[in-house]
Length: 315
Image (cartoon, rainbow, N blue to C red):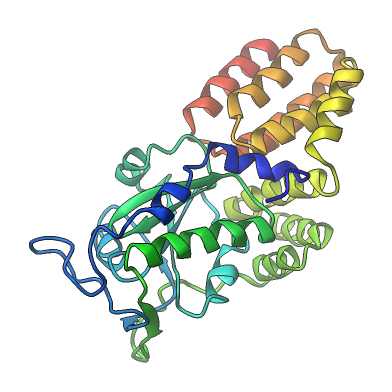
């Protein structure tokens, strides 16, 4: 995986999948994992599911642990708005993966169980075992590289079932409600790498409904991707080191740190700068901080601490 893109830093904190890929399977394919546990699916066996994209909660999550004995499960941990693009990526694997979306703001037990430090974050479930993958938003090509490693690890563990979507009854509610039109437009634009169009769609959604929290969070996430697009890690850090008084360069590093999961570093950099900044720069820094708070998740303890520090500096 190339280190030329800022988002590649996400993977530096990820668990090394090689140990799982290279080890012998804990159970042979098609045999039970233990007393009372679901049997692993035979290689390529069809496993009926209502959808490839599912919603997880504190109440129903045990069923997805069971499913992971047969099909690898990708868990999207988010706050308010699912991670853009993950659903389409998972669907492109034709049932070799399932995606379970979990809003950690509404499911405190899962947030604690996964020890969520920042959102969005991705975790894999293979044979009932959680495997941390990355935090923050990654470009599609890097997400696919990670998922290929997940599939390889799953194969070594005998988790090779293929999901078969069963027809839902006409009276059944869909597993996931359809996205509002502007949100759907934004997701499509993100899939195409057209971040400015996605930004416009989210801004329009917010103009129509200022209380649309999903649009606010989505706008913050895609704006971060747009600002980092085309910039390399080395370029960003070199510019900041060469021009320590250049606010734009420091804002770029804060973006980079947050996208790489270094949430506290990003906040501290901007808040420290805020202490001695003039009125114009303070306004710029405050605006960026509020955006980064949305990306990290407003209920994240680090966001709460940073917000309190910002309030003290303002008053």
